[in-house]
Length: 401
Image (cartoon, rainbow, N blue to C red; front, side, top):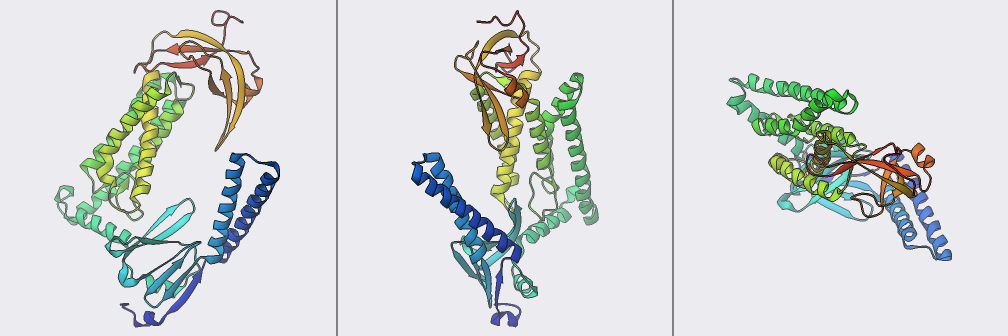
């Protein structure tokens, strides 16, 4: 039962904020109308399958947004909460709720109510027009994020390895933040030197960036009460996940201009390295809030790092003499996605026996003509993963057919 007797007689209904309702309704109507228009146009012209999928996507998204804006509401009826979404309604009593957590993603901030006995959860967007009664009702729900934070702080205060007094042990958290900031600064400087510094600095910078995950693993394993990889919202520990992301991006950017003859072999080694690193950090990620979201972020960061490390190690330390090859442009096309890529299709050459392609700049794309020569320097690779770079064609490297 509620600790506040007045709550037992409440009946409150909360709608999405006016601007959210307007946004979802207008956007949903526009997408639905666009999907309906494309559907009718395809019916008249026997449209192809990809166009039909696009039309269905627009229709579905439009219906979802319309329903979200018009139907969504939270009802507090005494000690019971009912959350109505676009297509379903969920309800629970305060006595059935174990606690709540707050998390954020690209679309907004959400509250998730966890039901007892693993009976699922109820999630709603923190975009409703609420009031003091709403806040009062939720004071009776345990905050699991705060509970986890208090549990960690309690463990810190009792861990004698962190200091002789509780104050010294709490101070260890502040020192951990300082060390984490220092590690971030170090990896950012190394990333800049690796990608924009003099060639003489790149080997050392690559080594620092490559050792970053080892440092993260060592800190997390040695002091799990002070450091974590990707933390929950109220976690008091120092977060080191962004160090992994910076290292991954730095290595991935350094791969520019390096083309692998066999991408499958590089990806196989990447998968093996990524699995090893995830295994080393798995125990630190398996508990707390938003486990799956944090695991996805970890896989993304370590995947980038693994591929970048394999390619950069294979190419940057390869000082062997290259073999020159040449081919010609046999076609070109533009690929549209999150970014626009300009692709030249090439005839087979050297170890590449099938038609292949390379990505070029926009200027290079429009300057290229069919049968134009393209020349490469092929290297064996330190890891025995053959790689090549595009080089200017000379009379020694290319003979016109």
